[in-house]
Length: 275
Image 1 (cartoon, helix red, strand yellow):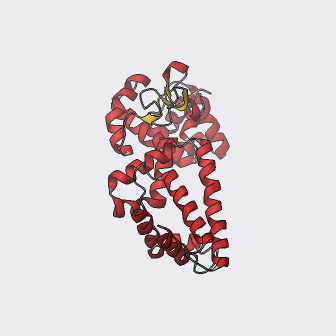
Image 2 (cartoon, one colour; image 1 turned 120 degrees about the vertical axis):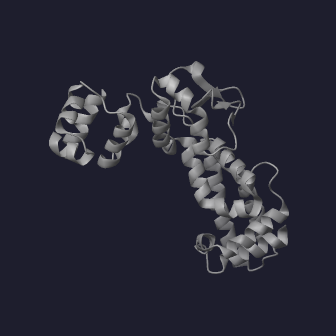
Image 3 (cartoon, helix red, strand yellow; image 1 turned 60 degrees about the vertical axis):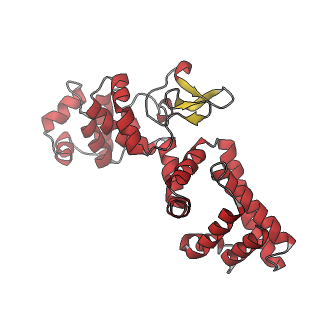
């Protein structure tokens, strides 16, 4: 759908006149009319304002679904030659060849803002817009793309604790490993997470933090951690330190106490006995 048709559709869905739309966007009615007639088009910043004001996703202004764009830099990847590769040489469904090669990101250990600054000119050249417009567009799109969205989720869940305990490089590496995990690995990790909770229940029923059920609990918990932690980061001491941290964090206590009262302490004791 052309941009002028998208704007007209958004206005009609909101049940408002061109004058009302103009008032809410701080422009003239004539400007809205020209957009809808296709005489002119709003700039990137105005498109962003329309999205925010009327609660519509930015990708609605594009002819293709969001999956058509690289899930790291937002550049279109319309043909096979532009796709990156997985570790086995197969085509990456999500990332372009400039961002992803042989199963890893080409730009590692960078935050979203750094990435935008480093790649905005390439985006501008590819889309035929100014660098300033590219920066504005990327700042709006990237938080919704797989790489940055999943990194933000992982950071929100574990970032403060891991950075405090192991440093920024370890957490940055953990974020990138999390994003690189395929759908099958995410499902496996989710199943393992449920298995840890079930084994915690069984071990607590057995009542011995040093017994066989508790040892099985600690082993499962270690397997689960290794799926998310960077290669080489896991050690018995790190595992014990994390378990100690659970006791000091209300979020983790609430998570494990869903199993039974005292579950966080029991898990901590089981990990210390096993590790």
